[in-house]
Structure formats: C-alpha cells, structure tokens
Image 1 (cartoon, rainbow, N blue to C red):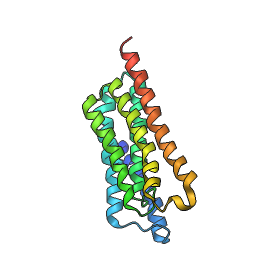
Image 2: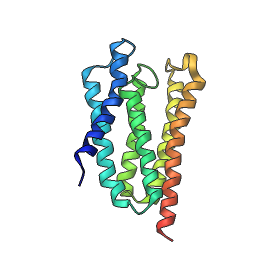
Image 3: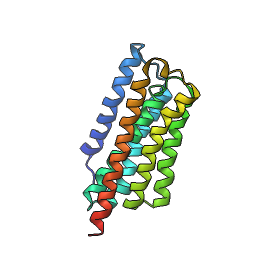
Image 4: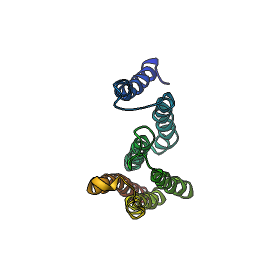
Length: 180
C-alpha cells in the first residue's frame, strides 16, 4: 500500500521536471504550448508508472531484467521528450517522424517477444540499429540540420543507439540468468 507521502513525492518530481521548461518558456527561450506540458506530464507519470507496475514488478526477481527495462524506458522517454517537447533532434523538420518508426520497431518487437528477455534483447538490438539509420536516411534526403552539425547529429544518435544496445545486452544477461 502506498502512502500519501509516496504519491505526493511523485507529483513533486513531475512538478520539478516541468518547472524547467516552464521557466524557459516564460523567458521566451522555449516555445511550449499548454498541451506539451500536459503530454510531458502524462508521459512521465503515466508511461513510466504503467511500465513499472506491469513489467518490472512482475519480473522483480531478475535484476538484469529490471535494469534493461529501465534503461530502455529511459531512452524512449528521452527520445520522445526531445522530439515532442523540444522540437526534434533534426530541427523543425518532418524527418523527425522517423523517430516514431524507431519506437514502432521497439513496440512491435516487445509485443512479438511477449517481453521474454531473449526476444527483448533482439528487439532492442533492432531498435538500436533503427536509431542509427535515422541520421543516415536524414542525411541522404538532405535534412537541413546536417548543414552545420553533421558530427553532432550522428554522435547524438549514437548515444541513443548505445542506450538501446546496452538494454539489449542487459536483456541477454537476464535471459541467461533465468536459464541457469
């Protein structure tokens, strides 16, 4: 049973996270609309809480699975936040829709794998590969964000790919620890 203090502390975390963009929006450094604040709060509260309750708590005995899932959720939330709230990694460009393809690879794979650790390892490996394809495709179609920062864009995508690949390795470890 959760205490009132635990529930309140979650609201405090969300409030602190949302204070940063609120401050930057009020200073006219960011241009968030009210709907973005609601979406961000829903992602933080709803998405992570549902994932935690439904998946991590059911696999509580396997620490590698917990870490793998936590790392994957963190990468997904960061990727979603950068694209929805900040305006996209590739600037204000329709090519940002490719990130939904990356997330679709992960969601589809998770459903097919039924959250089995080895299947999730394969899924997160494919997601990492899809993440690496985004800047390549964007560069090939001539996205303007690459004009001044080609190396930075590729490096950022490589960081996300490493998060997904790290999660894949942790899922592989979880799969091996359940078979021992």
